[in-house]
Each structure stands twice: as structure tokens, then as C-alpha cells.
Length: 215
Image 1 (cartoon, rainbow, N blue to C red):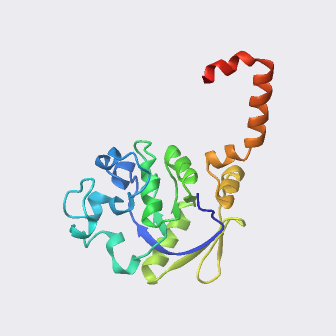
Image 2: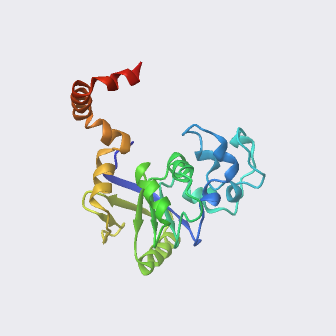
Image 3: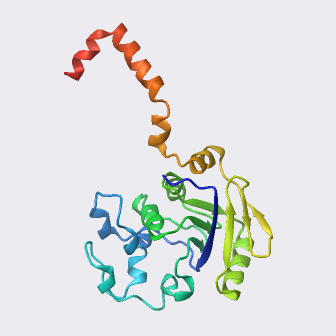
């Protein structure tokens, strides 16, 4: 997993509440067992005018000119600003995969669905919860200033606005540790490989018949 420390990026505003995971990545794209290639289908039903199916060439499809992530102004955005209850609906992990593979690294909203919120941290995304009035002010700032960018400093837990104003945010220490060091659950487990090996060797020495299970 890519480590997250300091990130500066263009902000794209998604002025919708209750964006569910089926909107983030529609169900037909869950057929794939790979963990790659979902970026082109992020927000597929909103992003394109034609019906999307797995395996299509995205360059041959018809983009929806009214969808915010298709605006030239927000091309290359890596921070998504959203309204309350982002990521509600089913618990599909494909949703954060698609967001990350599209190029997003930070999500800012007044609230997130719990399972989606947890899945973001496990896949290198930083979801930040801010008060509704702060999020509303950021929406106004993005609308007023083309090219509006924010700097997100995870170690110090602050968002830095273009004028230097700092917005503090909370993050659970364990999640922060994992993101800053680029560790997912597997990486954390492998960090104890020596202890796991020693335990297995000790257990096999005291209970040798367990070795029969490996044959």
C-alpha cells in the first residue's frame, strides 16, 4: 500500500449527499476478481451517457458533460469533497479500489458510512470527517477559485488551505500509523514473521503429530 504523509492536490466537489457504493462502482463491475482496472468505471452511471459493462474500452464511450469529474476544471483532481453519508449502501471493497485507482487520495465529508470508512484506510485512501459548516465553506471556496488545492498533512493532522489557514482533523492512531507507513493488514502480519515462525517451530516441537497435517 502506498504510504501517505503529505499530499497536495486539486479538489473536486461532489455536491451530493448519501452517495452509495453502487453509484461509486456499479454492481456489474464486481464480477472481476482482480483488484485492478476499476478506475475507468468510477461513478460509471453518472460519468458516461452509455451503459457500462466490464471490458469496454473507456475511450470509445460517451462522457457525460454535466458530471463534475468530467469538467476540464477538475481534471487530475486527487481530493474529493462530498456531502454527508458518503459511501453508504453495500460494503463492497471495490468502491475504494475504484476511487484510489482513479487517482483520488483524500475524501472530505461531514460523515461516511462505517464499513466504507474502514475500507478506505485499508486501501490507501484518507477519509476526513469535518463539521458540515466547514465542508460547506470549502464547497464555496472551490466554486470561487478555479484550481483550488489543499495540502493534507497526515502526521500533523491538518488540512492547509491556499491562504495558509489550517483545519485540524481527527484520525485514529492505529489507522494513522498504517497509512503513514504504507502498511495494510498483510504487511502488519508479515512484520511479525519471525515471531510467527518461532511459535510454529515451538508448537511443532511440543506436538510433533501436528506435522502430519502438512503431508
